[in-house]
Structure formats: structure tokens, C-alpha cells
Image 1 (cartoon, rainbow, N blue to C red):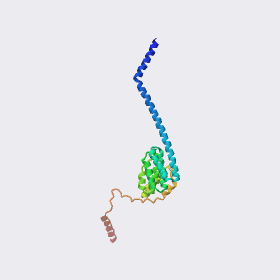
Image 2: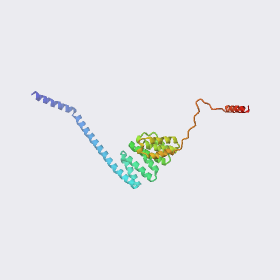
Image 3: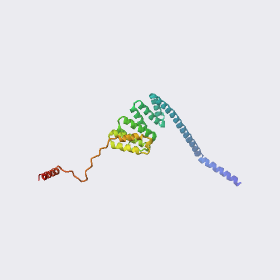
Image 4: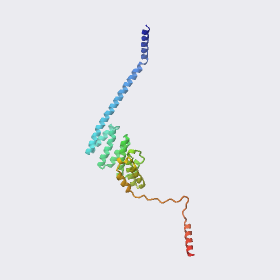
Length: 243
């Protein structure tokens, strides 16, 4: 009998608890289901966008290989407007820059690379774009812009490549000592063997004109001889010779 009453009491407690908190439980379960559904929908949409962007990028590479500039520009615009957050949109800028350079449209190539640097691309893609843009700027005879673009960049994987291009820019600016230092740093970089032509960099360093040594500074506290002192010395010498 006591066991039966105990079970009835437990049932009543459950009913009481459910009547008080059951609504919250239902809301929590529903919210969890919605969150799970939303997350799965987001993941599926993201995957679908990646697949669509990948297909477009493959089309773009075919246009680039065929030299179809008009078709490549259309696809690049589609990637930029519909799939701007994918890596394919950033990679399309690199592909277009190459195609523009093949058509001698260096400013269009520079603009495409500038857009990549201003966008949300990965650090690796931006590093590649920075090097290519620097070389275009050198081609355009804009070494000062190259210096502004590359100086202070801290990326060990690209340090040698940056250093070589920076050295070329310094040479164009007549900053021979800076160029020598840049080339030597490239040659001493253990990672440079796989990223630059070391023999070419060495030839560039050897081909630099000699840096003219600056006149030695005067001793601290020393004063240059005055004209009077010089004249006095000359008079003494003359007097001694006459005697």
C-alpha cells in the first residue's frame, strides 16, 4: 500500500513539475531543433556555394588558357558579386592579372591585384599578389611605390622574394647601399633557394656600383684652421727662408 502511494506521489510530482516547466522544455527542444536545422542549412549552402564558385573558376581558367579576355572578365565579375567570400574570387584576381599582362594592360593587372590586397583573401594569396604587384610597379618605373608596398612586410616564406624586388627598387632609386644590403640578406636567407634564383641575385649584387665612402668627420672639439692662422704660418715659413 505504501509503495502504491509512493508511486502516486511520484506521478503527481512529475505532473506538477511538467505543468510548471513543460513549456520551457518544449521551447528548448524546438529552439535546439531550429538551431540544428539552421546550422545544417548554412553548411549545405556554404558547400553549394563553394562548388558553384569552383565550377566558375574552372571556366575562368579555361578562358585564361584560351586568351578569352571578355569571357574571363564576365566570370570574374560573377565570382566577385555572388561568391566574394570564397577563395576562388580572390584567385580570379591573380588569374586576371596574368591575362592582363599578356595583353600589355599592366595598369588593369595592377588594379586587379590591388583589389585582391584590399579584399578578404588569405595571407598567402595576398603575399603572392603583393610580389606580383611590386614587379608590375617596377615595370611601370614606380620604384618608390614598390618600397612602400614591400618595406616592413614580415613573412618569412616570402622574405627572399620581397628582398630581391626591394633590391631592384633601391637600385632604381639610386640607394645602392640599401640594394646591397637587400641582396645580401636574400643570399643569406636559408629559404631563398626554393624561392629565388640565387645566382641571378648574386650577379645583381656584384653588378652594383661601388658606394662612395663619405668624408671622415672632424675630430670632436677640433676647429678648422682660420685664414689668419694659415697666413701666419706661411709668413713664418717665408721669414725662416729669408733668414
